[in-house]
Amino acid sequence: MNRILSSPWFVVAAAAIILAVNMGIRQTTGIMLPEISLDLSLPG
Image (cartoon, rainbow, N blue to C red):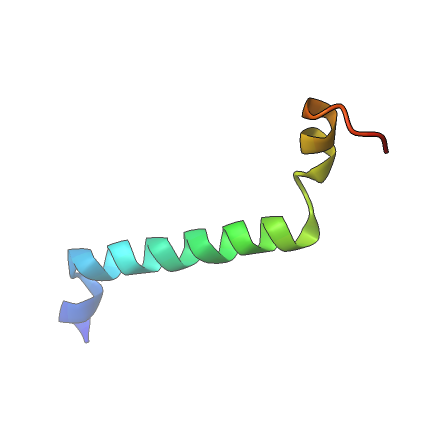
């Protein structure tokens, strides 16, 4: 098991999973919606 955790592919896979979860949470909760609305000059 120690050999798997020290593998560079494990680090890449873990980083990809963390990034995917983080981007999904940001899109689902609408954190960036106010900024996008201002850039597009949308009301609200």
